[in-house]
Structures are given as C-alpha cells and as structure tokens.
Image 1 (tube, rainbow, N blue to C red):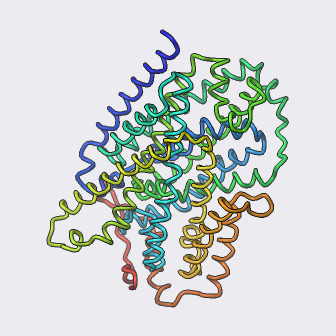
Image 2: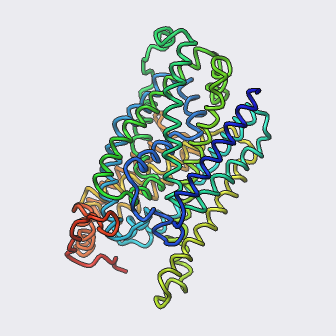
Image 3: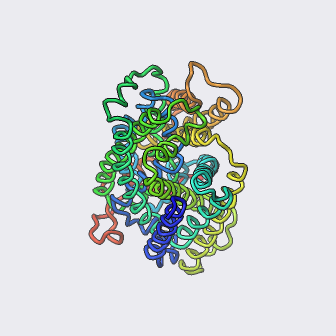
Amino acid sequence: MSLTGWIIGSMAAYLAVILLIGFVAGRGSASTNEGFYVASRKLTWWQDSFAVFTTAAPAAALTGTIGLFYTGGANMLGYVVAYLLVSPVIYLLIGTRLRRIGARLKYQTQADFAGRFFQSPLLHYLTSVGGIVFLVPYFAVNPIALGLVLHATTGTPYALGVALFLLVTLAYSYFGGLRAIAQTDVFHGFLLLVFFLITVPVLFAHAGGFGSVLAHDTGTITNPIEFVTWVVYLGLTPAVWADRCLRMYSVVDDRNIRRSAISIGVTLGIAGLSFFLLGVVSRAIIPGLSPTTAQTSLAASLGKAAPWLIPFYIVSLWGGGMSGLSSGMLATANMFTKDLYVRVWKPLWADFTRPDAERDRATVKVGRAFMVVVAVLSAVIAGPQPTFIYFLIFITLGSFLQFVPMFLGGLYWRGASTTAVVVSFVIGVALTAYWTFVTPPPFGFEAGLAALLVNALLFVIISLLVPDTAGRQTERDTIRVVATTPFEDASVNGTGTPAVSLPGPVTPSP
C-alpha cells in the first residue's frame, strides 16, 4: 500500500474509533443542562488533565509551535518552563476555588463567577462576550492546520480536509457534550504521548544522536523578553481560557483537581520538551527554512527521515485539533446560551411553572444550534487558507491573559474592587487590540504581555483608590466562604461533606 493509502486508512480507522467513543460516552448527556455542558460535574483527574494537555497541544502546536522552536531555539524554552512549572500551579490555585464555587452555586461559565462575585451585570456581559470573541481566532487554527497538512501529504483538496475535520468534531460534540469530549480527549492524549515518545528518538537517531544535534544549538537564551513572554503566556492562560474554566467547574472533587494539576505538569512538560527537541532536530535534518515554511518542518523531517511515521503524525494532528475545537465550541455555546440568550430572551426561563426538564432541553437545544454556527464560522475563516496560524493563536492567548487579574485577584485578594476589575479589563483588552493591529508595544514586548502589565498595575492602583462599599464586600465574602471551604456535593460523587453555611445572601445587588 502506498503512503497515501496508509494515511487515509489510518485516518478512517481513527475517526471511526473517535466517533464510537464519543457516541458511547455521550449517551444521555443531552437530557439535562448540567449533563451536556459540565458532564454532571463528574470529571475525574485524568479526563480533566488530558483535556488540558490535548487542547494545549492541538494541531497548530504540531505545526506552528514546532516551527517557532525551529527558528527560535532556546529562546522558546520559556514554553517548557511555563508548562512544567507555572501552569499547573496557577491551574491549582484557580481551579480548586472555582470548582468549589461551581459545585455549590451551580456556576458553569466565567461570567457566572465574574458577574456575581463582583456584583456587576456589566462585567458579566463583558466577560461573556469577550470570552466568545477571544475564541473566534482559535476556531480557525485547527481546521487550517489540518487542511494544509492533509493536502500536502495526500493531495486531498484543502476544503475537503477542513470540511471533514469540522463535521466529525461537530458530530460527537453535538451529540454527547462534555462527556463525549472528555472521553475522546483521553484517547487523543494517550496517542499524542506515544507519538512524542516514538518520534523524538527516531528523528534524533537519523540526525546523528542527541549530542550531534544539540551541539549546533548551544541552549543560549539570546532574547530574554521572548523567553519571559512564553513563561507568562503559557503559564497563565491555561487557567483562564474559557474551556478550561468550564472543565474546572466539572471536576468531581478537590482531590481530583489536585491530581489533575500534577498530571497537567507532567503531560504538558513532556509536550513542551518534545516541541523543543522536535524543533531543533528538524532544523538539523532540513536546515534553512523560513519562519513561514518552518511551520511544516516536522512533516518535512518525517518525510525525509521516517515516512512510516507520517500516518501517526496526521492522526495526532487530528486528535489535538479536534480536542481544541470541540472544547471551544462547547464553551462558547455554553456562554452564549447561559450568559446571553437566557438573559435577553426570557419568556421560557422566566416561567417557573414549566418543568425543569423542559427548560433544560431548551438550553441544550440552543447551545447545539450555536455549535453549528461556530462550525460554519470556522469554515468561513479557514476558507482562504491563511498561513498566519500563530498570529491567530497569539491574538487568543493575549486576549485571555487579560482575565488573569480578575480571577487571581478576585479569588485571592479581598481588596479587589469592582471598578478596578472593569476598568483594568477593558483597558487591557483595548491595548491588546491596539498593539496587535495598529502599532507594536514598546520594549519589544508581545501585545498581550504588555497589556497585562498595564492591566495588573491599574487593577491594584484603582482597587486601592476606589475600594468597594462594605455592602459589596459582605456579599463577596459570602462567595469567598464557598471558595475557601472544602465542599463535596453528595449528589455528585456519592460521598459528600456538609454544605457550607453561608453568612449572608449570595444574590448580587441590582
């Protein structure tokens, strides 16, 4: 059988397995709102951590990220530091408290926390609309990468590759919600780890061994700003990305959150180190690629050194890509339905004489429809075959960075004020857009990092100058009690601990 035949056959088998896993795991999940969007809050540590791993190592990572390591070398090692050390710590700090709040107060979105915690309807809408808009560039990244690579390796028309990718991803996500996505992510993640563990030594052996390859890359960091940028971008964003917050709400208990954080550090550490090694070994095998063509450096290296691994490479691309897109579709559908649609179009939800099952079915139905819209939007964005994959990723990363003061500050600093959160967030997002599309930021910083520095500074200064009223602080403290007190819902995990006794109302002031 030809290489093209092996690739197509491997893909067909892989997609069949993915659909089987998704449809079996997702059976019955659409019957309730919580079942569809947060898997009835029963995710285990391996489902949560493998989801973070695969969504952090999507199709774009096996193309664009390795291309960055190809050109940047040791300057990109901030990527590894972030994934191995920073990201799991931040995930634990935010995830533990969000999980408790979600289990006790039935939160499902970032806007649930931000709007209610800071008693601000404006912040609720800013957070929700921002989360949806920030994910839009990311929607297109994975279909673009898959379409380009499939066309380059098999001659499949780009548009057909994009359409097949979107249809399969939409199918199991639409049917089974987070349960289906979580279980397929475990399968994706296992295969991706195996791919790394096989591919790295095979390519290094072809290039003459680790010593020979690394002798040409001294490991010297020549651009400290680039190094720090990656530490911040990838150390902080995994904990504030909309789909990651959705999963935090879905984990079954604190113990699984802690285990998930450890697993995230291990799996993302393997991924980051693998990206670095694959980048430098690809430069040794096929030197002289431009920053644009470096995005295909791994595929080119495999074609020269180990063509038999290309089917596995394509399958790994599809797995990571589907994981990123499926979780993004579900998160945005949840935000659109719960944060926007239910609040704007109220008749069904304002009529409390209707049974809960009918209301649940309605929210799932609207969310599914929005997922179809997202898939169509992804196809439209991917249509022109843009080559600036990592530009799209940087827009997403930089935008989500602006949530960091809101979440870390809100959860861990009692002095954080509503005015500070709103003003600093809006200015951070505006500066990210300005420094991305109009003029570069000063001192060689990336737009999102420079905006975050301004955002965080304003957040602290305004909180000190314009503190919240005692009434707002009291209402916020009621939720803070929930966030800091271990709570296991017996209806979720079958064991449970006593419910927290709240000292005051948890309903936000008008």
